[in-house]
Each structure stands twice: as structure tokens, then as C-alpha cells.
Image 1 (cartoon, one colour):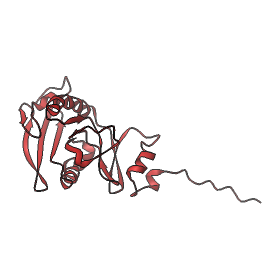
Image 2: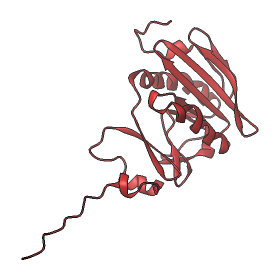
Image 3: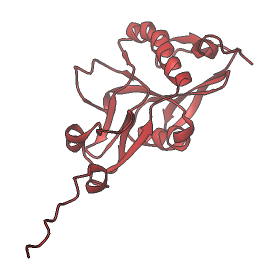
Image 4: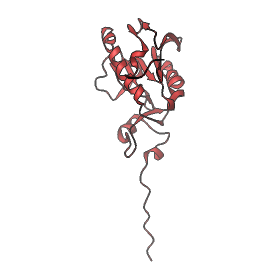
Length: 203
């Protein structure tokens, strides 16, 4: 009697490549089929998947890009809704907004050294990464500024951090109803309420 045919399990990159991810492997296997849209980031070869931003953050991202575009261009910088910000072949993040020192020139992977200011919108599922891990990674790479936005209902907080002695220090902060004003890394002047979806009543 013939031995039963053995069929190998189908290749699952999430299992087979755990801890081994690189930018080349990401280009080959991501995004993953049959899974909902996600943000793919990687820390030391460990792939980190996050759900796409909720409606409040996604709307605010679009508004912030509009608010920053003109002032950034006046300072010879460019605003991108998102880029793959690369630290090394096994480490990258995808900030919600990225202000670059110059054009990305259609690159898939943008070196951290070309980023003037990443912007993170804090999400419930990635609060620690957005508030602690990603800023630490950017500071270690010498990225000069880091902007964090946090939306909780009708409450909005915007905080700019500047790199001082390889660590970020808070330079400017404003919440709903206040003006967020700074002249670095370029002129910014807006009320965080401008990032709220229409119809959301301010507190």
C-alpha cells in the first residue's frame, strides 16, 4: 500500500520570517494577502502590524498636511502624508505624516537622516510605541524634531519636541482652543481644533 501523500503547510511569511524581516523581504511579501489593510513597521527584524487609523486620526492627518504644506515649502521642506522611514535594513517606521528636508524622489524607503520632522497621531492600540518607542528611535538617529498629536473625542493636543543632547525636550504644546505657535522647524500657527472632524463639538 502506497504511503499517503504528505502535503506541506502553505508558506506563511508571518511565521517563517518572524524576527528576520528586512526591507527586501517586505518588498517581496507585503502587504499580506487575505488580511485587512494595516500599517507595517519593523523593529530589529520583528514585524509590527497595526490597524489603519480611525476616522478621527485619518481626517486630522489630511487637515495637518494642508496646514503644514505652505509653511514647509517656504522653508524648502516637503510634507508627505506617510513614508517608510528607514533606520537600517531591519528597522523602519511609518509616521502618519513626515516632513522631509528634500524630495523623496519616489523612493520606497526614506533614510531617517532625510526626515526633518516625523508626526505621530497617538492610537489606542499603539500608545506606547507612539509616545515612547518611536520618539526614542528617532532621537537616537538624530532626527531634529518630532511632533505628536493626540485626539480624545473633542480634545486635541499638539506637542512639538526638539532634539537636545540626543534626547527630545518639549518645545511647544497647545490643546483645543489654544494657538499652537512656533517658528521651528518652520512657522506653524493653528488651533488644534482645526484638526477635528466637522460636527465634533469642542469641549
